[in-house]
Length: 417
Ligand SMILES: Cc1ncc(COP(=O)(O)O)c(C=O)c1O
Image 1: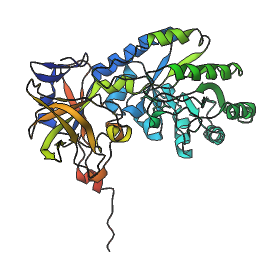
Image 2: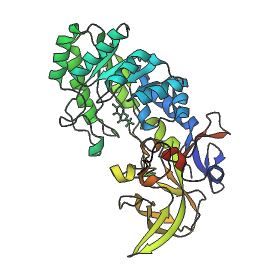
Image 3: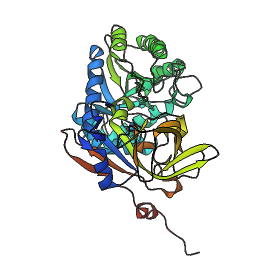
Image 4: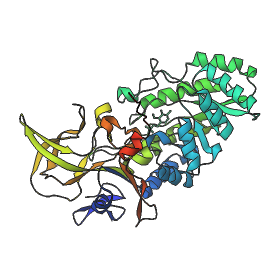
């Protein structure tokens, strides 16, 4: 079975860019995230091609997966970085991104983060409220740095058809600003000479398979942009969809890009996809610890949990789960659960799986985005190792080692009482 160009079974063994996943797990242990940098690069190229008609510049959204090897791979392949914290800016710079290719976004940037972004010379700051403009101006003045380019984040008040936690462009969302607030900022911005408002930004949500809301938001964005001649750049955000189920195919974006190309003529266009670049390049490998039957249910208890992958618990997200060794035998319906003390600690509900034994390994698929990036130390669990298979193929390395309990405890100081 072939999952994508990088991940498939060969002679019954799951492979990632021709390396046995079992072999990696034997050496590194589980749970472990494994990413194909080749697939990351291919996904980026596919999007660059899909949006070539609007000459869009892609800024990879680092929040999806900020592993330094991933950031380096996308930077080397020509993408900028969308960073939402000082930490992400620092990671992007460390990984080799050029400061001018970084967009600094985020709903509530601290003064320190703004100072750091301005000092680093990031290309853009996406602004989400009027006070932030003052902070940017003050930072540029005190650091004696010329103009800082800013894009105002527009909340177009449209409801994206997606999980409600991933819908960010409706009126009740904390994100962005109304057209009226943007108008007030633009009317007043000559007071802040260090901030050059040259762009508008929007991001109405994630997993936007249906482009109806995007089209509506875009027409509102264009209507707003046309009123202000200083706006020459439109950042349309991320949210490009990913196929999480085997029977799904993510809609091709070429058609949508062609549809909107005419409307965007004359503007420089930025995009901030995250998951569409990394999700299907990654998997989380877990090991069966126990098989338990109870109250008519079958529980496969594995060593990975909501602490390592919170998407099923947080968004009721579906991730396919496959054995590392392909099985043609009987199947049963089971719940795949983790060791965390929460009823929400379920990786898959009512899933058809081959019969499993203690020690068998499973791959939780399409977890390259918002997997490790959202992992926590809940229950004092140690965040897993991350392995990358190099883009050239044939070799792999641990890009981030598994945490140890000392990593966590060294941040705490016991009092003498
Ligand atoms: C402002 C912004 N841009 C881009 C993204 C990336 O979204 P996705 O990974 O769905 O492409 C997000 C996700 O939350 C976001 O909030």
